[in-house]
Length: 423
Image (cartoon, rainbow, N blue to C red; front, side, top):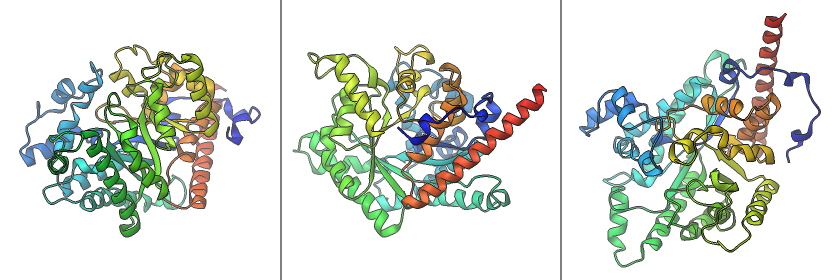
């Protein structure tokens, strides 16, 4: 447990958590896909420019046909990426999407963000890994420089913005995913597909480490995304071993659409320090070990995660949209995470595809699980503490301290306003 978990009651805890307070608090987003967060207006603009066909060329039309409030399945949810990835196939578009994404976060008070995407989905036709990464980094650096140079940031009235990029390997892919994947599968026509998937992941890990060392690109983590069922973590052990031995931090999509075994594989086979989604951590059903004592397996896994402070990247809206069995927010597994005092942080997953923001995710959690001010403080600060910050340990500590101090000052301001209004 963190040292602040058992502090005595503080008068500042007596604040009403309003939308205005949430909006002003410094926040993080540690699990957000760049290609799932393209502005719809930009998607339309780029599609017209690049002569790519869309189901509609109006924002309302795309929300009706593609980016919906609810989806029938994870597959339907992922359908929209066909269009967003489609317009992100040149360096100018990549830079524009990253720049706008950064400002969308800044404008809602997200001070630190770790956008993730799969560079190999954007490679080919002359675009190398370094071309893709440098384009995305340029967009983020430009937005960061513009915002952090403002007077209110320079004077400390508002906290500075920072970011680190996470590269995602794919559990599986086909020729249609990208030109890079088409060529890779074409070269390895006689190899088992699972070995080619692992080879692509290992190549991505090598490229990421090189980009950090040779180009200074702030790649802070390695991720594994895509369909869990049928595509196990074991196919990607070599890539994660390489990342692990080269000090690249690790997160894994696990327990989103598969049982607790997927989370177990992530932390044992892939050395995961964070888990993306982790929704099925407490699910009392086992696919691969049906004869094992289910309750004990789940309890032991949750205890291990709690003791090791493996952080869960919670994406409430996304889980509601992709899991037909999850009918109400109140039934989300975060209830058990909160009860067990696990390390977790609120994330959007995809700002556009899920039509959400960090502030909305926090408000959903506060109201659905009746969180108090102290609990909210813990979970927002976990986002800063468990981040893969692109600096030294001491720099991260200092940055986190500044965020905590700003957080407390915002809460104190709202507490006084509320007291004045009640007087």
